[in-house]
Length: 439
Image (tube, rainbow, N blue to C red; front, side, top):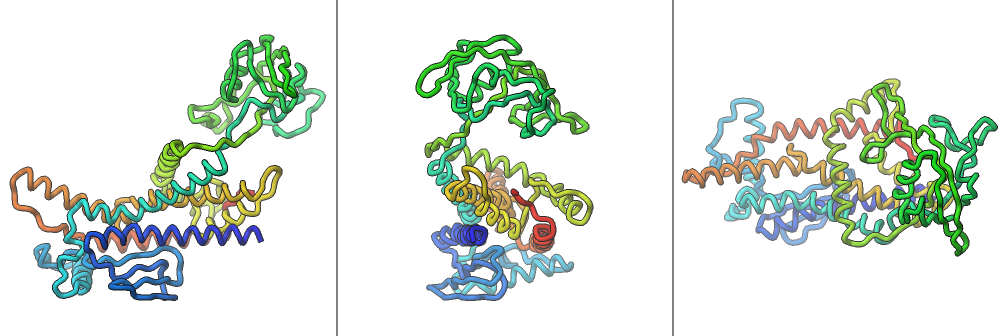
C-alpha cells in the first residue's frame, strides 16, 4: 500500500510540474498578446479537452510531457526573404513556415510569437524552466524548513569496543586479535555529549573530528556531559590508518581504484544525527548547490547514456548514480515510501520523497535549457541570436534585420526529438530489466 501511495504521489507531482511548466510559457505569452491556441498536459490521444476563450485546454493519454501552441512561432516566408526549398531540409523548413502562418487569423499578424521583441521571447521561453525551479524551491523549502536538515552533533551515538582495520566490514564483531578502542577504554558512553577536547571547546562534530584526527597518540583531557553533569576523562587515541578525504568530503582512491588511507588519531566514536530546521534564507543556497550538481550530471549525459547501454545490454552492473526515466522515478518513489528501518517514519519518508521530486524538477529546469530545439533552450538560443544581430546592426548604424528564420532549425529539432525518444525508450527498458534501487 505504501509503495503504491509513493508512486501515486510522484505521479501527481510530476503531472503538476508538467502542467505548471506549460503555465510558465502560457501566462507571459498571453500577457504579451500572443494567441495561445492549445494548452495540453501529455501527448497522444486526447482524453479530455474544453475551450475557454481562444484556448483549448486538455489532457492527453501519455503523461510524458505537455505543450502550449503559440501562434506564429515561425516567421512567414516573406518576412525572411522567401528562401528557396531545394533540399529536403529546406522543404521541412518551408512546411513549418506555412503551417505556422496558417494558424495566424486574418488581421492578427501582430499577435504572432515571432513579432515579439527578444526580451519578451526570452521571458516566454524561460517561463517554463523557471517554473520548475520555483517548484523545486518550494519542495526543498518544505523539506528543509519543515522536516529539518540532518546535522551531526557532538553527542555520541555509539562507542566501538575495538579498532576495525580499514577495508573490513565496519559492522563486524570484534575479534580477540583486534586492538581495543581508546574511547571505550577511557569510559566514553553512547549518549555522552563532548564539551571540549584537549582544553578546546567544541560545538560541532566537524570540530571534534578534526581535533581527534590531529591528536595522534597523545593522552588528551576530554570533558563530556552525562546525565546533566560534567565528567572529566582522559583518552589516548591510537594512530590508525583511515580513509583520506578530498575537499568535497569524498573518499580518495588511487589510479587502480584502491582506497587511499592516512595515519590519524582514532578514538572509535560516532555522532548522533539531529535535525535542525533551516531558515528561508538558507534555501536559495541549497537550491543553487543542487542545481550546479545537476548541471554537472547533464554535462556528462552522453557518457552516462553510453554506460547505460553497456550495463543494460552487457555484463556491467548498473550503479546507483545511473540516470533513470519515468519508470525509474516511479519505482524509486515507491521504494522511498515503503522503506523500513529504525527511526524511519512517515515523516522521514515524505521528506525523502519530496526531496527526490525537487531533484526531478531541478533536472527538468537544467535539461530544458540545453540550447537545442525543440527544447526551450533552443528557442532561447534563437532569440538571443536574433537579438544579437539587431544590436550589432544598431551599433553599426545599419538597417534593422528582419526576424531570425528559426524554421531552418526544424530538421535539427526533428533529429533531437528522435534522439530523445530513443533515449526515453532505453531508459524505460533499463528501468524495467535492470532497475536502480535504494534497498
